Amino acid sequence: MAALALALGSAVVQADPATRAMEAARAMEAATEALQTANRQADRIDALTQTVQAYETGLAALREGLREAQLAEAAQSRRLSDGSAQLSRLLAVLIGTASLDDASVLVHPEGALAAARAGLSLRDVAPALGTEVAELREQLEDIAALRRARQYGLLALEQGLAAAQEARLSLSQAIAERGPLPKNLSDDTDAMATLAASAASLDAFAESLAARDAPLSDMAAARIRGF
Image (cartoon, rainbow, N blue to C red; front, side, top):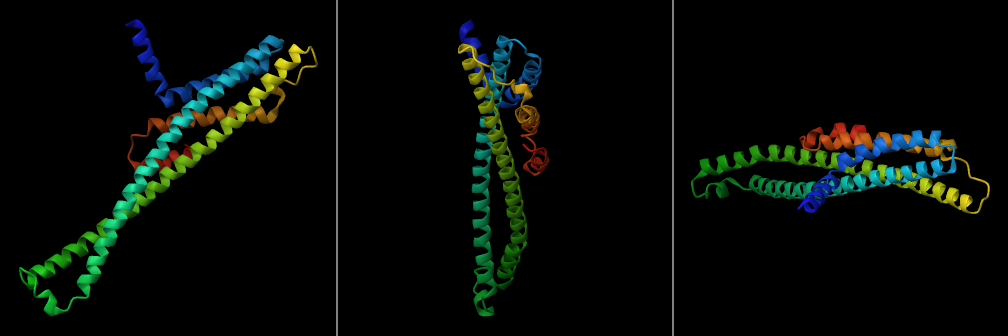
């Protein structure tokens, strides 16, 4: 039972991308410090391993967040398509109604007054439905922007991971062959900038997930933050 509880607990933790993103951001900050202070060969290997693991944790969180954004975008696209189709049908009815002559209107089962009321009702509904469709389209644009931001963040983390893995491999080979050691990753300005930017991006991603239950109209704030 204890093992089952532990497994279930692990599953819960793994299912929380916000927690993993924050953990990865803190791990990246710790890895940055480790890279800057590592002098011995073993310490440099450990620091690079720590960096690789931080990137892998961050990537797992971002991939799940990207899947969520893709699913939300698909669902919103369906809602927009349904709303647009409904609006098109309503407009077609209104156009058809406008083309009727007085004699045709008078054949309404409940008389001319009922026909007029029906036409007014349709005209009242059309603007509201049009507004709803416009809001759905705006929300879809917000979700699409969110998805693109997560894709860009994912690409940046993948590049950072590749650089850390390459640095660790080069160092391990140099140690094994007793050859000259490659420069420390902490001396690579671009790599360290990527590490710092990745930590900041993961923090922003975690913050955006905390607000994911907010109304869709509030998603513009998350888009400004980048995730």
